Image 1 (cartoon, one colour):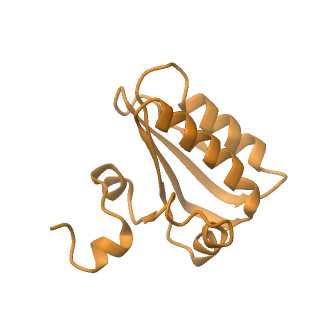
Image 2 (spheres, rainbow, N blue to C red):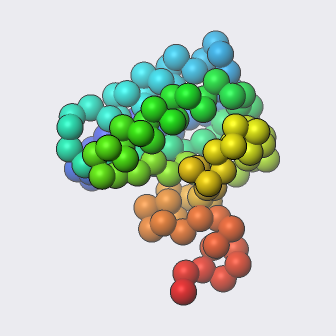
Length: 122
């Protein structure tokens, strides 16, 4: 896991890999908090493409990050490509809050994966 806070002033990327569960989520929470330092407007991309397993313990920290970024007139967008992540978001009722993005570039451009596959933006 790791954050790359110097990408742009207002854009931060947090990348996770391996398993995200009750035993590993504290490091993920720290990465999310570190990426949100400061008080300026913030756009946060969370890249979960390297995550091989994830459970519902990631939902509360992601929602906290979403609320913080939204209060700062920004957003959180999640990149993932494994069915398990989609199931966790669906089970938590958070698919609308966290639509799937296929890449960090698509997340930055606001193109959800389902929209990119069906023909792109209009």
